[in-house]
Image (cartoon, rainbow, N blue to C red):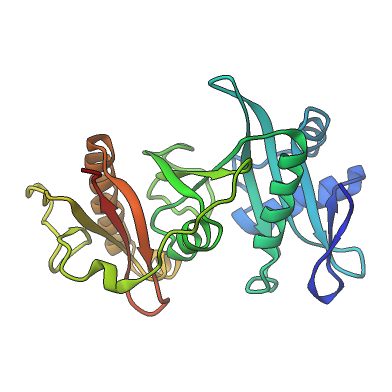
Length: 271
């Protein structure tokens, strides 16, 4: 695939040299911590490229790496799929839509390879990622996995409260349809998760019906740094809700987040 020139002269292209792949490893360490146990080494970044995966970077005009994305291509249920394993943007470069541009580049590469669906994971408590994935990119929350990467990855980004994840699925062979992002959709809907207030207390029955709201913090990372006990209460409550409702057939059908108040997933059960 040809290089793509993004805003401010940033170029998105495949990583081409060992030094560039080493820079991607350094960016992983800067993002998730030097002791991060899940970092992908330079050799695997290369192997992934050779086997149909994607290892691409966003390069500044001076050649420095502003962000990168890495994923592997394989077969699931007889269909060609791609797992987007890692995406990172350099500190100070967030808010410039580099992550979204890398994801779109990755998607186009997958389309050229004949991939039908892309998958990746995100922490359900991180509202800004949920909003990007569901309301802007048009991915769907396919599955909830408790402690997908273990209880502790030694990363300050993840904290010590586990690595619960939603698995996102993103169509490549057809156009994605973003979910609604509207607080009004949550009005009057029973609240199924949250550490206090209207949410069910630990051990109390969860609400039933055709729709429930699973609330998450407006800024989980800030909460994690400020109040570990409250962050733990959020984690336990949200985990309980997803483990309860998704096996019953509920789907994530909307998400609401404005950055100031608590965000929320709308879970609905098809008739």
